[in-house]
Length: 200
Image 1 (cartoon, rainbow, N blue to C red):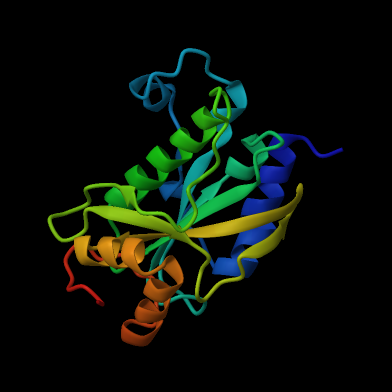
Image 2: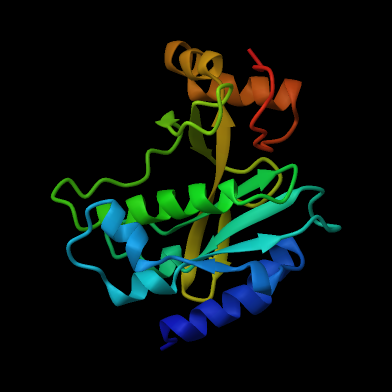
C-alpha cells in the first residue's frame, strides 16, 4: 500500500510531467495552517498540509503558465470524489496560486461539514479576480484529459476558468454547456485573463 508521501512523489515526478511537462520545483507552494484558520477551520487534518500548488512554465505541452494542485485527491475521503485542480494564465503571477489554494481549502473543509458538499462543477463561483472577472467555474479541461490515473487511483482534473458577469448570467439563463461552446468558438482555450472581453 502506497503512503501519501510516496503517492505524491510518484505523481509529481512521473505522472504530472508526462501530462503537463516540466515544473518549477522551487515555485511549489504548500497549503498552510493559517489558510485553514482564515476560513474557520477548528480541526486541522495533518494530511491537508501535504497539499500544494505546483507551477509549470510554458513548454511543448502547453503555451501558457499552468498551475496544478497536488495531493488534493489524496487528502479527499470517501464519499467525496477525487479531484485535482488546474488553472492556465498568460503570465507568471501569484493570484493563480492564491485562488487554487482557497478552492483547495474550501473543498477540504467541506468534507468535514454536515452538508458534505462536493465542488460545484459547472456552477458559477463568486471570486472577484478583477472588475472584468467577478467569478470562476470548474470545468473539464479542453486540452487535457479530465480522467487521469494517479498513483492512488482514478482522479478527475477540473480546470478553474475565470468568467465575466455576462458569461455568468449566460450560463444561468442558458446552460453551462452553451457557455462552453462559446468559449470553444471564440477562444478555443480556458486561459484565465484578468482583463478581457466577454465571449457572449
